[in-house]
Image (cartoon, rainbow, N blue to C red; front, side):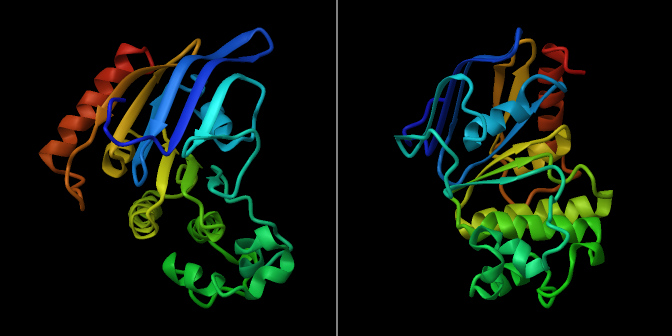
Length: 248
């Protein structure tokens, strides 16, 4: 990625193996501050693995992760991670889940209520996860991801388990929250429309081992029209790139 702006997150993977399986190879990923970038590719091409390396959750690889020029060798609060499932603690209230970084005593922290209001859950502080819908639970997960005030937010297919209407609302919420907080976002998705709708760039990975095949810029202004011709053209471009690496 050529740019006059320095990378906020710079991930360089010379090689990553799971036993004899070569998962990632000669892959460089750079994100500028404020970007939303999507990773797409076939199942098993290493997208989620790359996300975990970027988060510092897996250090068993040859390469480096740098945040604003500083080499990272462990998870840091500046990088948040949101999983495919909300992974809320069922014995904790919504407020306790959001502020879990501080332990259960953090439920009264001043950031909790504003974050819940921001994700559309004002007044849910005392609710338990079993009282929430799937979409509401993922909103709590997003609020929890924002609680530590990260500079980078990594999301691993966060909307794949919700219905189509909820997914649309959560997609719009993610873009709004990212812009408002000035957060850099790296999103793993299997949804081509989601990738071009949300992102400033779409990275296409080939498989066996995972390498960066295409870096597709999405220069459309926001808000974007889901059914507009420009978005359709970009969907086709990403589709062709995935077809080229035999992901489809």
